[in-house]
Length: 509
Image 1 (tube, rainbow, N blue to C red):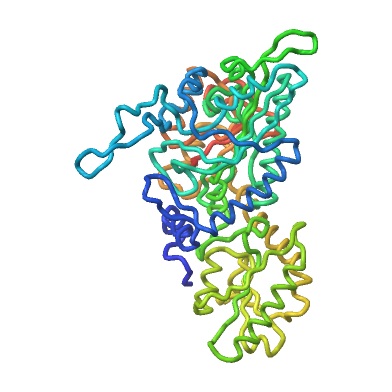
Image 2: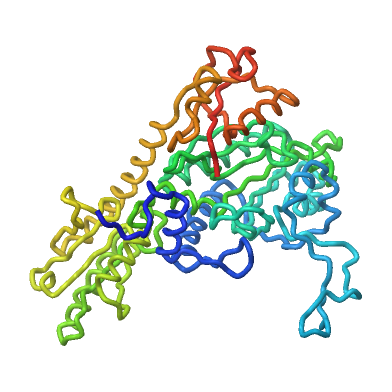
């Protein structure tokens, strides 16, 4: 069967991923290595992410603010493990003016060298920590609960749109607390916010759990993540939440006087979700005809395509479609007005139809003269595109009354996309009892092997380094130790010692 994309997932998953982005008009190259232009449909999805996640963040008591994109280098130098973790990814500003080089070009002016280099924000723990040191003096000032929506820059060597770019968009939350227990509770609370957002809004099932020591955020005491499985069986870290303890507080002098009058260092956290989540949406829900966007995060949930023929009947057909659009906009789905677009661009109707199918609009409605004469519309569900005979599943239904059932239809599409992804996730996590099973499972040539769940003793230091190197030989990484997991009942497959928890192993983006 012929599909809308030039390459299938089965033939070349990486090329398919790029094809989805291109054909859906989501993003394009910018002229700067590793940076992308996010086009309106891609950015519209990000705006939906922002709206839904921002509401959840504020509901937990956080306030939005903004910090500068430039951070003094000395701020990073105060937290050794943090600067070490980001040193190879930092973009640094050293001059503030350009001058002509006499050859028709421009060069930095030697006289305009900065006294102190400025790092282009890779993350904001250091600069926000300095602000916390000013804001927090007493236990009465705690907790501090803030969030910012911003761009960050990490000079990645190997880039891929949405998944790993030199500049990306995200939100980063930062908090300060009086006790470690409060900070840990905050860390896990925000992890649950991310899990809820991923599953109930993006329809991406995830595994929430703690990252192993070698995968912790630089400077953190503990890191938790939500891990999503892509259709090629690889893992994608879709969001992280970090308990920083007093590591940053000691470096940045975030101290407060407690109720007994004694000085203590604050306990801090940080957490973030980025445009990488759009990459997850593509690779979890996309098919060989393009993107499939869950209705809750679709910029347009219903797109109406009138089949105009440049005849006097067109005016009546547009009016017929506009009445439908108005009826749809008066309805509510997921607690918001239905987002319905009437596409009147002067483009052939079939091209518009396939354009919206490739973009992944949940419902595409075609309306022609015969439909109007019969009081009907033709409805295409993006989650169920073809009939059993391979033909496009375009169902004729009565226009009047359709709007009244659209909420249930959109909810069904949302649930269908989640259920499909959840079934795939559950079917591709396999227990393994020894190293030989790991080697066999990820043998060379194995296609879409998914993840393994293994028992381990949680080694540290040199013992953990040995485990990481052993996994690296098979291009594997430790993902996380799932929360709420079953008790261990055997030995660590790496060390032979008694296992203390179960951890997921897989290939990852």
